[in-house]
Image 1: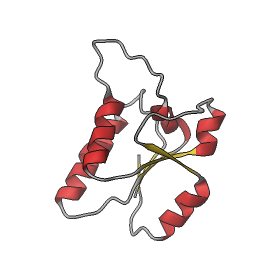
Image 2 (image 1 turned 90 degrees about the vertical axis):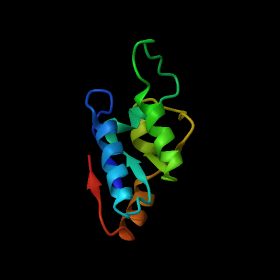
Image 3 (image 1 turned 120 degrees about the horizontal axis):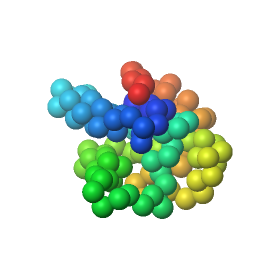
Length: 112
């Protein structure tokens, strides 16, 4: 399980997570899901308007997760506190209770 709480727009965390996940999968590990919490929930915003000279890192990350069949979950409360009422395609609403249930069956947790 991968857990992201860092601001994905103020740091290269999405690239780091993608590189880590790719390497883990290549070594035969399975990533059951990626959970976005606190500042990291900003990635769900579907209304983000990037300048034409910037790469859509979130879109690229979503494509990677889809191809690797890794569910992308985000904390409902963290998103609501930040004013996000809808999510871009590829993200699934979850809560801390679901995170806790999934955590109980995970053998490893890596936090970014």
